[in-house]
Length: 193
Length: 193
DNA sequence: AAAATCTGATGATAAAAATCAACGGTATTC
DNA sequence: GAATACCGTTGATTTTTATCATCAGATTTT
Image (tube, rainbow over all chains, first blue to last red; front, side, top):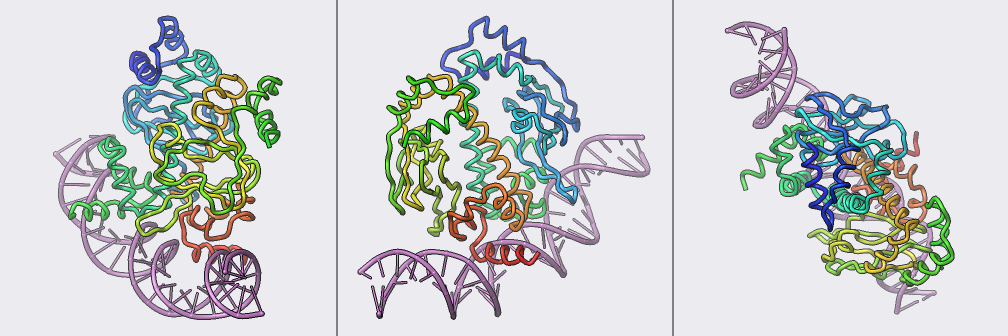
């Protein structure tokens, strides 16, 4: 399990991890298996762990008054899952995260994040991930205010084609902020071009 | 000019800056004045500076095929302005940033960011800002996929009431991803409650 | 001070998307 | 292997929002 994470870290850092760093990583990340449909985080709970997805697929969503789920994030292999706000501030989360497929995940607690960040290479990784994050989020915001449904879908298909393979259309639709019916029509329309 | 920034830094860090840190900050941040309607960053250019707004107001926006501007971010006092993607990757930016009011800004180059981050207190600030950033962006994404125009406006009014004072309605509308006409109706409707 | 631009409001109409409903095909469950 | 839930599609209708057009007050420019 941990090998995938070590590789992920090395692929982002300027210098590979030392043996002792690897030992630390193995110590502070706890493997966990989450079965399909089970929660990794439930609304109202504090997010106690961030998790690195080794294998599987998860979704993060809010639920509105009418009980409708709104997917804010999707996670597959090599993504970091969790609710940053709740994790950092120790406040109850507004989101649920559950497994869409059986998922193997390496979890880390807030206390161990401090250990993690004390290793320069890992602190670097953390910053660089935050950077990518900020960039990706702004793109998504820009798409949401400037593009019609059809083009948002096209952009998603181009940026994260994996998502379309791993998640059903009603999940993708929710992620795009449209209904499943609209997505279905958008797709059939796109095919005709 | 620099005092505002020093204060901002101290308010975020666990320990106040030392005298020598302050000297460094004064050295690596260059004051600049941007007149109303002038660009801080123009689409197609590489974003060479990040800027801390000391006084004034700016907006960041993309422009679509039809020439319509779509406001992705708004900046006032104590906000950090710039296009992270372009700044970090050194790629041409897809955005424009211009001054909506005459603006005093402290700018820092990519090279000096390295110096900045070599000071632990400042590196901490940078991480903590990224964190807040990630949290705020996710909230905005959640709002954009789960709330109708009226509630998105209400949320903005609650979260950043300053924006409503400093920017005209067509800017706010664009930021929310709706037209100025819709915003106008949403507001008159909200008043009646 | 007159002309031009900017801002916010409102009405009429068009377009986009949501909702409601029904249908087959595919998995899953019992 | 029958029953049930899930998934994607399509049609009819309603709701939401965009577009187009006009107008009046305020501000800026010349």
